[in-house]
Image (cartoon, rainbow, N blue to C red):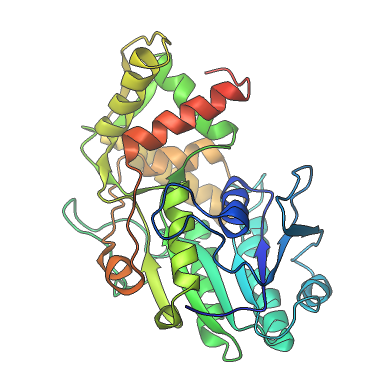
Length: 346
């Protein structure tokens, strides 16, 4: 088990960041071996929790990590030998592509330099499937030897983030690649997905048999905690997902069944079915917009809807003892329950 003087978690305002803060502050109750805080003797600092109240014993610090001096100021609060877990990032920019490179690449440039100056022991960064793009065939599964083939600007920004981290030499690093993740505290776009399914507009592009690896938030937090505690994880990349990929048909069918059978929310029981050509057209439109620095989230999402994005998690199982304990049905059950408990309309 690695020993850290402190833990800094960036991006704690996000739904992933909040889950990771909870995992380090109080443990993961449902995960054997992770029920207690992993590093109880070190102080825990979280950046940018905004209106969220950090759980004991975490403390909160506000910082604009896109500014080098801000990264230096935050990291200067860490004693030598600290762990930094970098959850901050941007998936969908408000309008301009440059926002992706600032949030994903430039922040890592700043953070890696500041971590080295502060004598941090390990920097764990949460990445994505996008640096590797989409699987070349329906049967293919990404592993840690898969080459970079970034999917448009988001993929390139995350690839540059990974390359920056791997190139620096002062701090040991670990990269966690997480595909589509889901769970409690989901943002509006995830709740909209539930509403679309309930209204009979769950999108199926092509036959719906394309597979997607997905990651329940607690599974992802478990992997981060276990990677942090494993000296062997230094200098390694891990794909992290649920135990198996799911087809788009399976994803939408599962959500529809849970809405009706367990939450008494009637569904139209239809699908918004589009030909595979719709995603190809959306991809061309997305690429054209991004070429002039612009971004449209719905076009981008549609461009991926007929793609297979699936990964192999054997390396994480074998090296850090990763064991995804929550599957799609249970994860979506918890997600829907959480959305309803927050008064959100599905």
